[in-house]
Structure formats: C-alpha cells, structure tokens
Image (cartoon, rainbow, N blue to C red; front, side, top):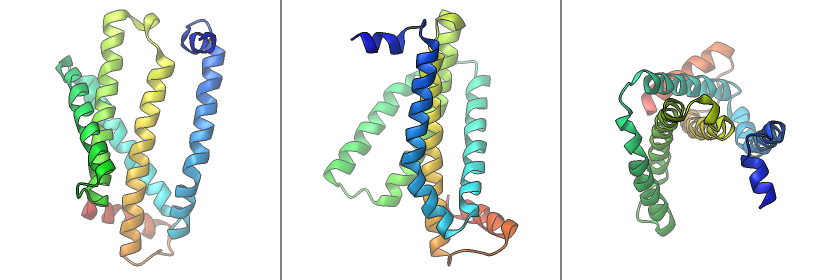
Length: 185
C-alpha cells in the first residue's frame, strides 16, 4: 500500500518520473522485435509509420483541443463497449478476422487519443493544472501513440510484403510506402 501511495502522491515527482522512464524503457524493449522485423523488410517502413502516426496523433489532439464542447467525454462508455466487444470476439473467435481486428483497434486507439485529450482538458478546466496528474495522463497518451504506431507499422509491413519486398532507394521506398498506406487504409 505504501508503494502505491508513493506512485500516486504529488510529492514524489522524481520517483514518478523514474517509474515513467523505466516503463518507457521496457516498452521499447518489448517493441524492438516488431521494429527489427520492419527494418528487415524495408528500413523506411519504421520512418513512414512514425511520420503517419505523428500526423494522426497531432491532428486528432488538435481537433480535441479546439472542440469547445466537452460532450465528447461520453466517448468513454462507447470505448468501453467497443473494447469489450473486441475482446470477447477475439477470445471466443466469432469470425473477427485479423485485418478487421487490426483496423478496428487502430480506429479505437485514435478515438482513445481524442478521448484522453478531452479528459485532460476537462480535468484542467474543472480542477486546475495544479490538481491534475500529468504523469499518468502522459502515460495514457504515450500508450495511445504506441498502439497507433504498432498498428500502422503492421499495416505497412504487410502491404510491403504483398507488394514484393524492399525498394532500394531511400526516398522511393518511403514514397512507395506512403502510397501503399493510402491504398490500404
């Protein structure tokens, strides 16, 4: 119980920062096999996936910030319902194919970015910046970003494998990867 209180106490900023850094480090270790696989297919895939993820993340966050209406906070119940449906479908295998799952989870995590950004803004407006838990809010947005990145990386990798492997040029491979994303999405 004491460790739990330390992690959520506002007085232990350095411990919380250290825990976030350790979490990010282990997340990087977990993601490294997927990134290495993408680099083996084509070194530009990771760059293209990162750029597409950044563009999606920034545009969704910007839209969430300029939306004045906080009625989008009700997305939490919709997200829970979609997540539970996807989990049960995945668990019991009700014909949800792999690509359907990948695209649905990509859409779900894009909704999560919007919802988490709205939730952070709502908490700041309601309780003030000094009463918000910015470490755990940052971890939530980080997880949204990583999940979107992984789904886009998988989509580009599979598209590249279907289209015949790697393209030798640096810009040609990236441009071809972006074109295949437009076609596949």
